[in-house]
Image (cartoon, rainbow, N blue to C red; front, side, top):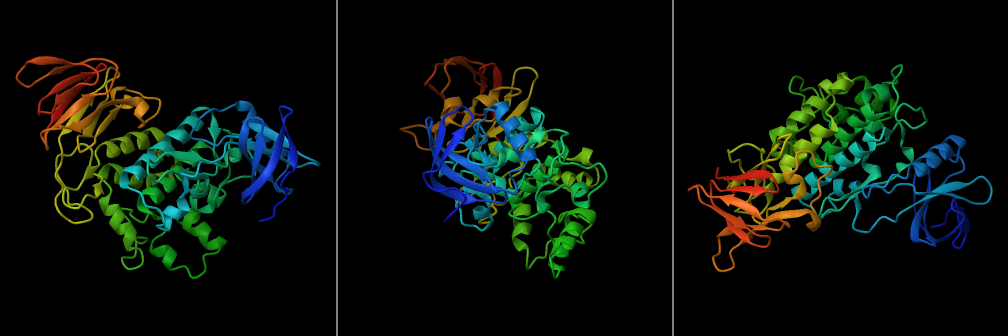
Length: 443
């Protein structure tokens, strides 16, 4: 593959050092991405096509680099690069191989799990929330700008050179399928910002979890030529949610679009309720769109209550606070609900429900009322469910924190659980976890 820059080309980084091109990684709508060698190791370089290397784009990139935004969920521009003539680009970290693009997921070329998908959705929401909290709008949230690890659900947001300070105008409006209706229609005063980002984010979440676009039902199938005019009608002038409870004109076709009917049926009501709000009221009134904090709380609860079917071993999303078992989406047998740990955090008090299925784990965010982010790595582990080494089927809660717990049994007796020790699991057991109160309940 040949590109604008030859191997061995030497470019100047804004700190005065050099970046040497060692290979081409790919190309997109605005430019090409190269692998380069720098004094700080191997990096990725985005180099703009001449038509895109405008003074306006240069100003955006320089401002993004100047923000020094340090977040491991973003491949953020961290150095400005120039070469001969008027060409320019920016350096970012190289994307690790474990992160895959969403198109491969939509084409069913990746093996993953419901837990990983829900985790990816949660991490996406928190990543964009972190960006918005700094007064920055992304403006082009779509399937092409995010990568995820199908094993863990970790995410990386790429192509961050479209982000600008909220309220600033620019030429980027987004990708049609993900754009808010007011942008598609070109309403007076409508510009890309955090409010339109909320619509795009909800579209992306729906596609991630349902493997289908929320506005592509019978109406799309009836279109003979999906040209720009047809897209503007579908996404802007007459958008209609495929699961609108009051209007079934755009409902999925059972023959052609049966997959989304099945995935929607497996989604817990807590998620379906938010999707319905966003793609009914939120299509007509931007202020009614689901906020990042609402998605965060719902996705976190759903992840904590995923249940593995005892019959077929498949993961099932369940309604977080329900004691009613549903049928497994795969084999149809009734799920066996494991005990539930109800955690009440220190003030401001928040209640969390965690199903204590095989290999259940508690992390630092479970015992905090307002955690800055959800981190499921070993570094934040507080407790985990372990099986007794000599008594199969008997489980206990192992203390993986640095502090001792105080546990109270249902008979009123208490004990101290030191770090590394395991507490036998019984209904009614109450444990103080770093100031949070946790009680075991059997449904």
